[in-house]
Amino acid sequence: MTRTYVFSRRRTWTRSTAATASISHDGRHAGRGGSGAVLGSKNIKAVAVRGTHRCEWAHPRELGELSRDLSARSFGPATAKYRELGTATNLLTLNRFGALPTRNFQRGTFEQAPALSPAELSAQYSRVRGSCVACTIGCEHIYDVDETGVRVEYESLFALGSLCGVGDSRAVLRASHRCDELGLDTISTGGTIAFAMECVERGLVDEPWLTFGSGDAVLTAIDLIARREGIGDLLAEGSRRAALAIGHDSLAFAPQVKGLEIPGYEPRALQTMALGFAVGTRGADHNRSGAYEVDFSDKVDRRHATLDSVGHAIETEDRSALMDSLILCKFLRGVFTDFYGEAADMLRLVTGWDVEATELRETARRIIAAKQQFNLLAGWTPEEDTLPERFLDTPLPGDPTAVLTSDNLRALVAEYHRQRGWTTSD
Ligand code: SF4
Image (tube, rainbow, N blue to C red; front, side, top):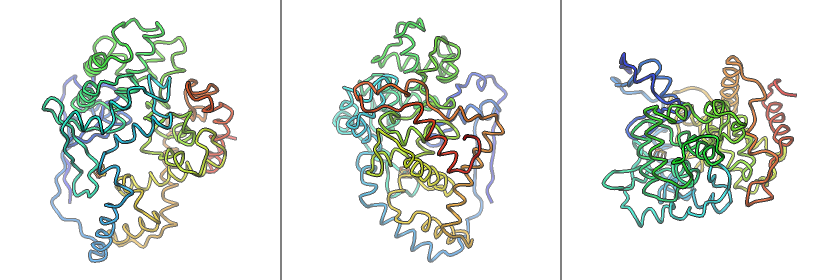
């Protein structure tokens, strides 16, 4: 038995909540998609859950054995980078691949990236590790910045660092912490600020202080967004709505898909991921599509996606859907040798259901189809499965071989729809 308590407050603060507001719990954040704004709009301040009965397991002895085995495997090489350095280690890897989004996706490399690397952060700030409850990996790396513990993740470093052209680690960590305190999604906040910086650079927005490279500007913009003051009132809506208000073709370089800001993977340099972003049911989301892993493998040419890439993108999307439904941390994905088979074992031992790998594969596909059905009912059209113009038909500056043509993306999306069995595209 679980009891859920919902607290609501009849106050106007909910109406001033940014569209990028997250739901936070114990320093962790469900950041993407503005779920915090949805609760805010319903005047819900917090949800408290208290369990009163222990959950029974169908096969406790076998489950214990499987759990011990999984735990032992989780200490292996597949998770070493998360344990030792955390997700921040991705920053230099992506920079090396020319896939680190920089200055609102105007480049794929950032000259100050080393200043934001885990090695440099560890040299400058003391660090402790943390973890979610009962996790054996412990990917959390918390740095002491001016006597404040700051949890550092790659996505926050990229969005508030390279994407805004800021290489001052203190400013980036403070900005990340500020977003956490205010309950703002760091990716969408950084993406929208970077977009605004480019608008200022192009003379479309008259806020001369809001310039690439200024850590102070990022910190100021975050506070303005949270309070919806001045330019912050517009930026609190996210980059798509801001672009529609600013006009002058700024939508072409607003870094979003279906209104969700693009995470830290340059689409022109990682084209299987580009497809994953384009077709994502809630927009550009690395938690729903792990296709960047395919780009980093030898299965595809990451700069030239072909129709063969589509099956790989679908596979990572299906796996993500099932991991989310089973409430498995995605950092475990590398420890499974037969993911669907092992997932079926886990589910059977916990629930007693007679479930097999093939059924879970079908379930994963049904989950994606159900999300698509929701979008259809909400008015989705096939034209929304695309990327902003910035990413199409012109090479990534600094990497002339990284070109994603609009014809190719259209063909990839059509093939994706065909393989999904959807009839929304020919
Ligand atoms: S459960 Fe996942 S996110 Fe949480 S500490 Fe462990 S590895 Fe990190």
